[in-house]
Length: 338
Image 1 (cartoon, rainbow, N blue to C red):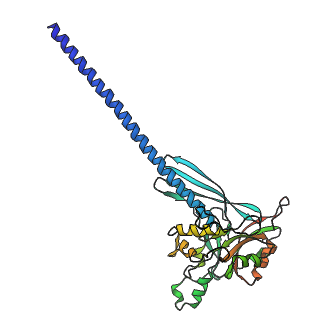
Image 2 (cartoon, rainbow, N blue to C red):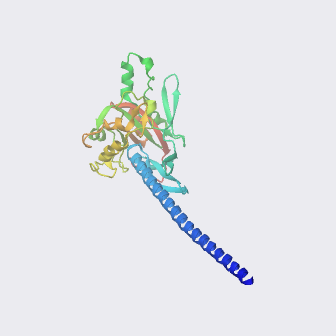
């Protein structure tokens, strides 16, 4: 009898050992498979985040080239908030005749699938006087005054239209440069809208030597885009920051977004990215680019300098409108470029 009992105990013990082994092996396999799966998922998410990060940074670089009127990016950096969420930020500034004036940062928060949120780039638009249809633009974050350009084609299309009620009444061209004479010992920024498009060489000759050319505006090809709607959607190129007003040609077909050729390349890749009043801004811009910088034409410029020099720009024959932007006092310890 005792032999049978001992035998049953042995069997139960062996079964228990067997089950323990099975459980141990199963647990180990589960841990290995689970760990491998977790690692694979984590690695895949990492790859997707790296891909998105590169995509967003590339878009920042394109915007810095073609959509930043006298706005200079000084740094770009990432801030990871979660495994699958990160924020790309860009510190920015304006060049006001050699003075560096802080400008609100640009940021975009993204995940593995794309953008979650981004800082607003379009300015707030106001009527300076509802009776005169004069407009004023301010930065949403800092309330700095933003210089704006005027779409001459829209103004002319409105005047020749038979049914004016179907169109938005155009904004009256401003002449704010002349008002800057009231500010002494001050540097300012002014957007000049030309009466027509001029070549790069002509512009450098006709703009007075005592002001600095900071930005060349390509203009708007469409006559359906009014001035107010177009604000904040300008296409153009920033000039060198040494006061010479120079642009670079860049390399045709190059991968790097530099110079005039870089502008052309970037515009091709921007189709569909920004549409205003059914006008694709990139496609509209591409209609106005030329073969090279020598044959290129521009519809306006942003210039900076001493307010007494800027005030004289409204009397120039090529000036259709002037609109003021940022101003900053001249300090005794730093001389302006011009």
